[in-house]
Amino acid sequence: MRRIDLSNFQVATSETARDINRRIVLNLIRTHQPISRADLARHSGLQRSTVSVIAEQLIRERWITEGANGHTARGRRPTFLHLNKERVGIIGINVRPVTTTLALADLDANFLAQDSLPTPQQPKQFLAELVPRVRKLMNARPELTCEGIGVSLPGRVDVATQKLVFAPNLGWKDFDLKSPLEKATQLPVELENAANSCALSEICFGRRAEGLRNLVIVTVSEGIGCGLILNHQLVQGSTGTAGEFGHAALVQDGLECSCGNRGCWEMYASNSAAIRYYSQAGSSRGRRSTTLDKTISFEHLLRLAQQGDGKAVEALQQMAQYLGRGIAPLVSGLAPDMIVIVGEVTRAWEKVGPIIKDTVRQHSFTRAETQIVPSDPITQPRLRGTIALVLLKHFGAPAVA
Image (tube, rainbow, N blue to C red; front, side, top):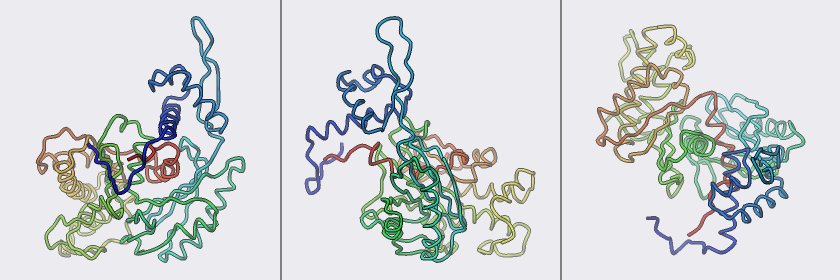
């Protein structure tokens, strides 16, 4: 049961019902296109007359278009409806410590143009270099009207102020990216943590999450983050810092983390941790050293493992064990239907997947049938999630109660 907050609620009106029905129809068209009005009525349970009114409104507003006619044994041939991909474009920005990726996408989150730039260490310099790239993408398809900008960040964003609270792997703190970017582009900007963006990508554009009420996304990169979808709701917490399991202590008195704490999960299960394991293999350095081999990247480590390099395979296996140790409490405490792992490590899933699952079975309290699956890096879930951020105001469930 969801409790009604009597200090902050919205009374349902006839307009609320119309808005809900409109979004249901719009989402059904997006999910099942091409689809007829009759099939929309069957899927939604709405009266055909109601569906027709909503469809005509969406056509007038250019959200959907009519396409080819279908075939029927008798009666009038149905006209199929599609999303109007020529209506708007959305700018997505995925910020990571080394590289920032940008894209212009359509309503189906298909990328129409992409760009990238090295991520500067100073946030003000980053903004100065980012704005021209965004403007260039805005002009890449002049026929599209840009709806907004979504930004994925490797850190926590305050839900009230929309400011970046902290991003240890970037070295940024208390940075307002939203206001100056909106001023420079005259577009609304939505910011979100990378793991939450991936969670939104999965529920908005993924197929595996259909029908699931509880979903956890674990992003594995330079650090580790978690996006939580519980009872169909994105869990952000009172300040937007919910899901910060990457900075939960996994090893007592362990290695010092960039966040200032010791033994954080990401110090043992991130891409950087795997590089450290590889660097330490066969060396005389202590196991608690944080020294990295700067001549090797995680991409290089993956290639070495694919080529059968024993040190690289061992490093990935050690990383996988710690990933499983950190995921086990998520399974025990949240019992999600599915956990999706996002990151380059999924390219070596045949090597790390069985270890992760076996470690979770050994260390989780519950025997709930939680699926643990990899994402497909080709789909760029972080970047696709930034598109979902902008589209939520049209496709997401409206706030009531």
